[in-house]
Amino acid sequence: MKTTQLEEKLHYYHELLVQMLNEVEGAIFLAVEATRKRDGALANQIIAHDQAINTLRDNAEHDGIMLLVTERPYAHFLRQTISDLKIAGEIERMGDYASHLAKVGSSLPHSKEVDFIVSLICEMALSGAKMARSVADAMDSQTSDPVKLVAKMDDTIDAKRDMINKLLFDYQSTSDEERVALYKCFYLTKEMERLGDHATNICEWMVFTIDSIRPKLN
Image (cartoon, rainbow, N blue to C red):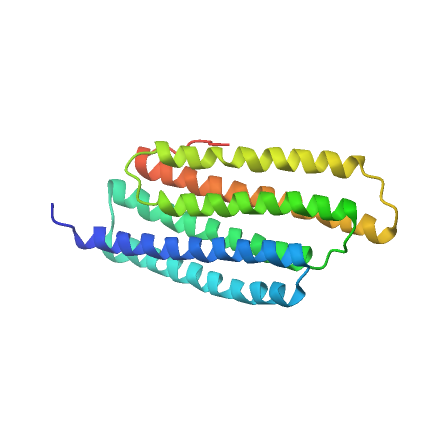
């Protein structure tokens, strides 16, 4: 079957979204490294690079609007264009959380309690990176089942969040510095939980494209 001009443009649009997801995945991996090593210089590089993700988002929004105006997509194609516009914003927010992890995580002091919590936060972040990779792989799925499986991965992040929060509430800090650090860990835990939520939102928009109904996946 011959590919229409609209289908070709939507294919290239998906390639732009996959590029954004690749950038976010890489930013998360680097943010985890900066956090584990408390590497402020690397964190600054990640924060600066976030502008590249923002620029890709701007390009995606521009191209999506131009598709709506010039191609006047209908039915499935209209759903896909609208969903892709939403997805671009969700990916950009995931990039923001990678930057936040790098900025805050790299500044944390070392202690037995803080280091253990940080290791769990990094596991949450890596689960988010895995979701980003899986979303990219499922971007052109013709059925919603693979996408729904990706959304289920967010359960792992939520479970880790609950574990960390319980540990934080149980810990008795021994200094003001550690108390502040544990509070920052609480903040990062919430940020990484939101990282998974945005990946889940992307899955919901992808299901909307395929099934014409946006479900609540988590």
